[in-house]
Length: 377
Image (cartoon, rainbow, N blue to C red; front, side, top):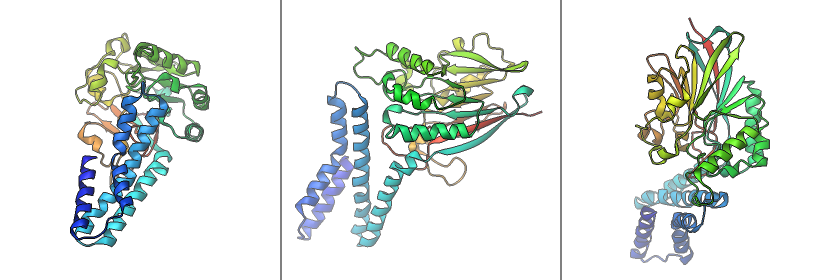
């Protein structure tokens, strides 16, 4: 914000030095749009709680700042060298890109098809189809009926045996999973197994006296189970086919790790409880919202397949080859897509379907992952 204001001041100062009149409306517009992030901060600071309306208002104010200020800033360097037309083109391209990110980029679903091959997989599970979704952030969805309805339809069209959800179902509080949201999510036909993420546990609720972390988490789990989802709260269940079985483990996000959620050295909690009594010789799928736990999961002898979310690729990805590039790579060693280690174990990080911070996705389209299990000799 300060940099934008400085750039505007310099630009208007140059006009004055040339004794050219500056329309008052242009100055007012620059000041007002430069201060939009401050307005978002004030709304969040002065509100008694982070309600859905407060969070959505803050997100859209930030997007409005990006949309009104970044194109203007893009013009200034070109104007310094007298390339007015090039500056106008650059500004238009940025504006169009931001509009696309807040519309089609935010809602256009992408299906990633991944084959997981393992000699440890029982023969009865050869060809099993799993769908992974993640990070819905229900409280920030603009059009639930359209977005969740489309999500359920795409999942059902893939005919999965199981749907695995890897956390951040809500954005701030359990109440976001209301009857309308539950009804839309119940359109998913396959059994759904889920874990909690950092946004699910209630640590972002400001009014923690009336809405404690424990109460919020219990309420969210109850609401999921009421709509038929199976919440793996630091526990393991077994999926059986014929006489064979595989283990499915869920690692819940520990609220105590809130401030370490982006750390590469995230301590593992709940693993002893989750894996207690689980045979290491059994093929294991682990759901862990944060991907930083992968090395600890595999070091413990589990996680033939680990599924995570959390990162969203920061909702900004430049695709040129492979997984592409995102600012997320500065924070996370593993941040999007598939990773394999030397022991034949796989981590897959789903880019999620929701959005936080700003209601926009550029390059990191909302993702559904179809994983097909294959037995390899």
